[in-house]
Image 1: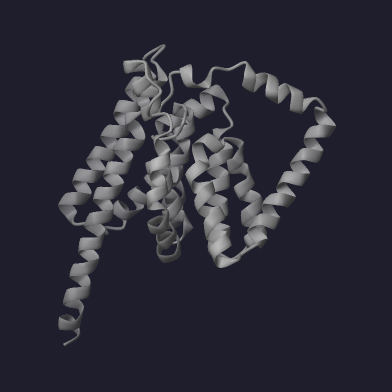
Image 2 (image 1 turned 30 degrees about the vertical axis):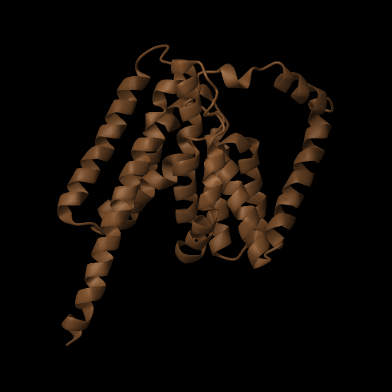
Length: 273
């Protein structure tokens, strides 16, 4: 029964997360980003670097969403000299190009035709830059993600201390709303952060009162998201709040967990005595 819950709860949280529903209903490929991020984080943790690199290649499908994670992984690999990650990515790239040229030889010209025919920065997107553009008519904040460069040393230390799953979750929570452009279905990459947050609550790693508060806020996010999805023709930029709200809850839960850990460390010698 316990094992069943461990499987069903993450599945339920992931499936009924608003961006997941949008991804499924529209048949978007953003789900591949989610798979690539989770699998590569697990394989990096287990030292299976080539497989991690191959899985990470999936995240390059939409680099405007995963740009910060990709940059962090590249810098981390260089720092730790784990070159097999690059070999895995290169192998995945080679296989993909061979398959692509076999099934669609004109893919290069088709790609550039598609790119040249889209005014990307005039779309309603679920990012801060997109929201500001729709409300104020300026693209000034489309590249606000550049500000994240100052956090790179801290993020790399986090990857070493807490593992890549946590580091990726934090990186995505701060980078997705600052992306050049991205849509509601691209926010599906936040599912691991939501599941991790719910896991902390489920395991009782926070004070009881904060467990109820954060858990209630998480339910509220799901409810509001579901209600918004029932509104027809609602523009994407109105969903910019989602990663910001999840990031706020994640940061609050992180702080409370740290406080509990510090208190436990303080009282542990007394208990031994």
